[in-house]
Amino acid sequence: MSIHKNHPKGLFLLFFVEMWERFSYYGMRALLVLYMVKYLQFSTEKSGQIYGWYTGMVYLTPLLGGYIADRYLGQRKSIIVGGTLMALGHFAMAFPPLPFFFSALILLIMGNGFFKPNISTVVGSLYEVNDPRRDAGFTIFYMGINLGAFFSPLVCGTLGEKVGWHYGFGAAGVGMVIGLAMYLWGQKALLGDKGMKPANPSDKLYVPVILIAIVLAFLVISAFQFSGYDIKGMIPGYIYKLLALAVVGGLIYSYASKSGKSTLTHVEKQRMAVIFIMVFFTIFFWSAFEQAGSSLTLFADRETDRVIRLFGWSWELPASYFQSINPLLIFILAPFFSKMWVSLGETGREPSSPVKFAAGLGLLAVGFVVMIAAAAMYQQSGPVSVMWLIGAYFFHTLGELCLSPVGLSLVTKLAPVQFGSLMMGVWLLSSFAANFVGGFFAGNYDAMNHTLFYMIPTGTAAGAAVLLLIITPKLRKWMHGVH
Image 1: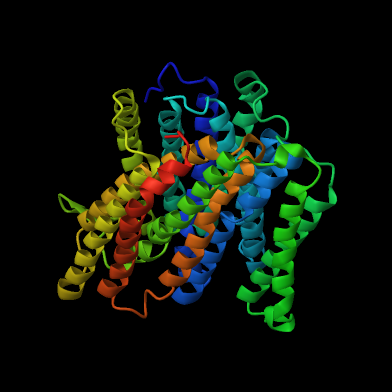
Image 2: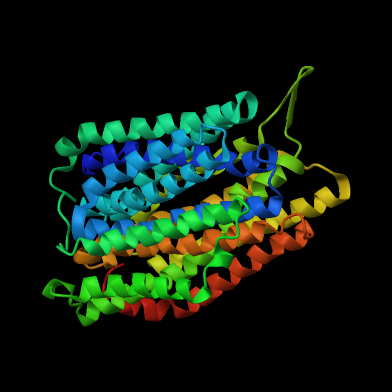
């Protein structure tokens, strides 16, 4: 792989750091549902709910991590905090007792909140707002994400399913430590002063302490609830509403107080409105796309012929291996997309970001049409060829390349500098909602006809694509020249 010589050198470092962080995340995710169903003996419904809770909260805490980076720590220190917490979480998964399992999930959730929004924001800081290399740079960065995501199910999945679950989780922890060490080694030389200081500093230290305490309390209560303790039933319902209002009110008050830098112009307000609208549409994408770690993994495990037969020799592929298809395809196709966006931009034919998003949703729907056919074939004749899943992942990958790296780039272009990491957290908030919805939807996998099951994400993705195309002219107007 070659990275274009004109891209900033810091992109090399962030590419490989993100690669190892995603190795750890996707290695653990590839095993999570299978581990709960086969080792912990959880039901499919409970496993789907925990998966949705975990993957959802992983994308909620970046809102908190982005806020703390903008106001208190800066992006660079937040990345170190997040990487350390995630390494501890992965190693905690290597211990069998159930309390370690939920403690590990909480550490991973909090660590990702500090890490995820801030490394993407630092990538954005390497480019000027309308730099034509920007989308291409984020596509290259996205290749790092998917290089790690490709190898992790092969390494962690093999260790977890063939040797022992906890060896797989331990390997994920090693990957996170390598990424953190690489970041500490190269950040000063390759990133300079990018992201070192908070963009909109505050001295109200009690605000982040209170917010972190509230989030941790919610995570602990949820963990106890999943463990079989009715903790929520002991707490009046209105308490949750008051805490939610306190969190939102605290954020608003902290940002609105004292600093003239927090005052937004009319153009900035409309650009931020575009971010929120695009966040809404990405919920439809990710809630369907994230079936990869749940219902599609179960389809691979139960309804796919995974046996490779050669000259009398046979070997059954672990179900977790199928989660490497998407990142492998991204790694192959991302350079093409990166070059395509630059070429179209130079000739003035590059589609706007909302149109790219709509294309991504449409391609996702096509992928689920393939799954409808695969489920129907299974009902008629039993386990199906691996080519059906490969075909579905191919269209999902095309859709992801039209939406995800473009979305990261869009947020860094539209967000006011003083709200950079916070708005990246808002962007990741779409994945929080989507993973909750997708996880609970996947919990119905055993209770529904699978052909009908896959019709639902097909319809929601296609409908969202059409609606987004309808409102695209208004969104382009509100973007005020940002392409």
